[in-house]
Length: 215
Ligand code: BG6
Ligand code: MG
Image (cartoon, rainbow, N blue to C red; front, top):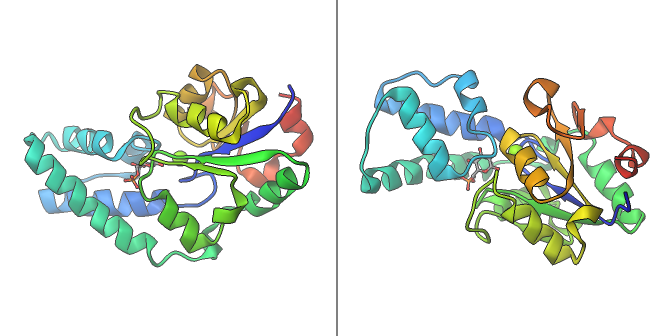
């Protein structure tokens, strides 16, 4: 392929925020009186805040009306923001900075394509905002992954056609979104969850520019 742009999911690809999402959801489940495990949490990865709450409530067998759901999601987000407001650049995942630096030195454009409405705050905390030519987050989109909107908008903001973009994703919903958008994708994590990706690597340390170009 002719590689012109790389679009990165943020949570779980560039930075390890999944643990903070988990802590906050678990705290909410705890207050409602049920157990929420790391296994349950897998299904929440890449999924929007309200869709995550729906999954959590299903796990607990709890029914809430719309107003209560908004209150619960707000409560979770306040805890989450409290956790991420203490993040440092030490929490950037291995290989991220080297890969971004390499891509940019080759003239390949870089973007964030994240479902999170907190992406801007995280990028500021870890000091990586300037490593991206475009940042598309949950505040800019209407349809959550697996809908391709977030990645298509990322490509559009970069001024690159989808077929010249590669997406990096740690969530199944994100891999589906990339495929639906007509983009090649690299799964970051386990092939057990990310089998539909063109290539799966354990982290960004284990990928070379040639591998990306040869997808
Ligand atoms: C995704 C995470 O990046 O963002 C999900 O993988 C999360 O776990 C989603 O629910 C929305 O994030 P936020 O910060 O807007 O609640
Ligand atoms: Mg993710």
